[in-house]
Length: 212
Image: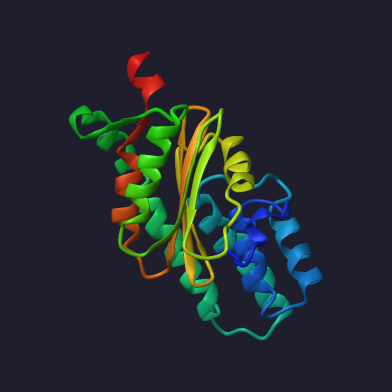
């Protein structure tokens, strides 16, 4: 889970850190939550879902138990760990799917018409509330409500070498797919089938990669 309503654009750290801070802030003060996360990530911020899960279970949760009279992990934190494991389970599928070249769709993110067509098609998918298709020369944005700034998240994750990523934002979820120097981002309702959404994004490849 990650806080919504524009928080995605704030430079407070990765999506995962934002998510964890929001959950912990329900039980301790925001400053205490930041201190807990800072100590837990002192040796480095994890870049993979399973690494975050191990960090929470092995480092942060024992510390939280010492601070508060918890007999078991709070439900919000349990749910967040389940989401991490679900995402981790999906990750290995990517390479196998991308090897099936007949199922891939080459996208030219520098062609305004191609960007618009892809954005319109993705916006029609069930549960989708917003789409961003961005290249170096421009981007196409379609949102049914208030726009959400996905660029900061993409740039942050790009440093970690991500290809496909998703995070829950309150009642919504965000999915990102890096394509060459650009990306495709989708904002959808939380109950949207995440596996299907990620599968569709993983079919997209940059035309530059296909043409070499």
